[in-house]
Image (tube, rainbow, N blue to C red; front, side, top):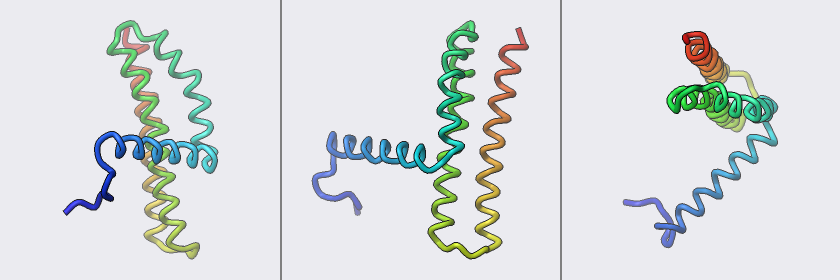
Length: 123
């Protein structure tokens, strides 16, 4: 059984999904300082990755390894929003969920640094 509303198929569904995605970007940009910083860094990192990469694969690795950081940041922000929605009181599992999300961001940044080091220093 489909949970889609009648009429939300084909191009209509795609347009609505795109709109929801844009709302997510705007919401994250407005509410998350770390995401705003990552967007700002993207303005430098993406052109730098295009310039420093010598092949298409190198360029893809340099840029994709960076883009993973704001993607994981958005997922971490979503986890934090859900945890905060449940309630403001301290709970061990709430803290654990937030810590794990933060660790995922740390790993994404570590991966970015590793990829850039291997690509740029491995020549």
